[in-house]
Image 1 (cartoon, one colour):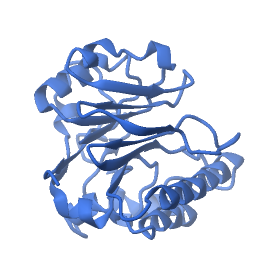
Image 2 (tube, rainbow, N blue to C red):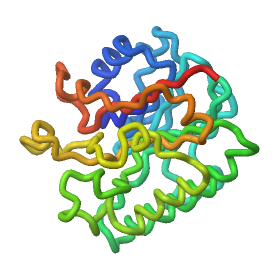
Image 3 (cartoon, rainbow, N blue to C red):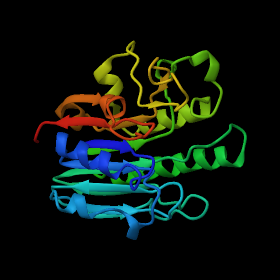
Image 4 (cartoon, one colour):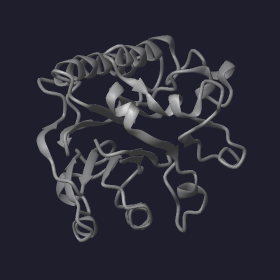
Length: 259
């Protein structure tokens, strides 16, 4: 199981295909695909045995889910969402008995703006949907780009950013509300409370090389799924060794033992 904000699937198609060939994930969730559904490059993934679900308005945004294990009970977007919360930012599907939700959360832009208020409202709606969709003890994994750094250790220099967008107290409260539905932050559980691990770095010169990053990509799992996680890791090599301009995010990988 893997998740990756690719910052345009058409610009990054060959990198993603090469990464898939190397790691062969059963499921790959993609965010910020930046293309309409019909323009998603399905062919190379179908040739590799994947079914593909993609939603996107073109321009910014868009998510996709690729699976070698099939899909059941697919939900595109959050049920009942209306503008301005109805952007195509999530896909939910049951895959081999696991309920998988992938999200690309709104950025929020700046604290105190309408964009930031919409982000917080979107998270309230998402949390309500996760609570409803979990059902009676169904295994759940919520994975993707949350656009939130939930702890100070998730930012390269916390004192500079603590009250800004991506780290503000209301955003961190929104992240905790998701955890309070019964989900576990399995990236932080894997790395421990004191280890700095990032998934996004500004493209400005030197930020990646000096590890001035942020942890914005997350995997929240129900306890039974967390227990099945044999490894949880972020693939820095996908950016460091890219043969062409990479995304500013790196893949998040969750290895799960079979249930």
